[in-house]
Amino acid sequence: MTTVVVGLSGGVDSSVAAALLHDRGYQVFGLTFWLMQGKGQCCSEGLVDATRICDQLGISHDIVDSRATFQENIVDYLVSGYSQGVTPLPCSRCNKAVKFVPMLEYADRHGIDKIATGHYCRLNYNPATDRYELRRAVDRSKDQSYFLYEVPQTSLSRCLFPLGELTKTETRQIAQSLGLATADKPDSQDLCLIEAHGSMAEFLNKYIYGTKGQIVDRAGNVLGEHEGIHHYTIGQRKGLGIAHPHPLYVLGIDPVRNQVIVGSRLEAEQSRCRVTNINWVSQAPTSEPFRAEVQIRYRSLPSVATLIPQPDADIEVIFDEPQFGITPGQAAVWYAGDILGGGGIIKALSV
Image (cartoon, rainbow, N blue to C red; front, side, top):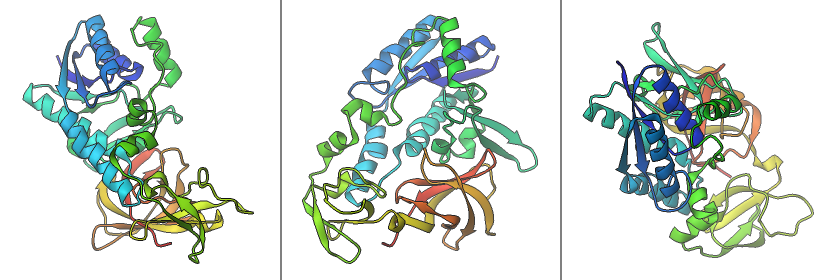
């Protein structure tokens, strides 16, 4: 019998993933990482609900205290990034450093064959390339492949994603038909820190002391005052507090001068960016330019671009059409159809 450890958050998705694998004849073990104090699926509420699901399915459940790992890899990472004027993407980093790699290590320690989660994505092995191909989920509105671009091949080779062929509605229906305790539980926020702290601003205010500074245009004209650069991100329009005849957007953040640079929407569009910390996923590494559809944030549509690998292992991305709000710290992830080729972190842009 194939054994599998399922990462359980206490939400309906991971609950259904465990139930489906259990019904398919796998020997299932439940695993929950305790990430931080607070409310929501990542905290005490999630621990309780994950335990209830394991009791209901008649499977074992282990809770691992990962608060120190989460603090180092996510909290400290976010605080450092926002303090330097970038907008980090914690979810992809969390999936690799806090979830998938530790899950694989847990599986190895306990002699378990596979690891599984409730992510909406699909996976297949391509013998021609000898790589595991990560694909978008059938339900494009719930597709989470973008957040998994950092997961290495060593983890993907042992992964199962039972929800990849399902829509969210079908997942709910399965949970209800099985009478799972989490069947009617509301979906979690995209970012668990918001659930635990109320908002990103409240979370950051616990760790960063905001220093007032100037809001300026590209010419250096002072248009207003900010309460701390960590409250701003590229492309932001709301919350600037500036009376101006035309809408203004954040174009850049200068941590050295403690300034927020603003301008028109047109000025917030750029045709290229530099991407670093590349992880080649379904696509094997190459030094040759190639074409792909590039997604620069989770909720954005992919846009066609030419990707040019650089000698320093970065990639220069040149879009066919200018993109609004390319944001340093976020991920640029490229696809060929529904296959995720790879991705990396957007470097700081010149303003």
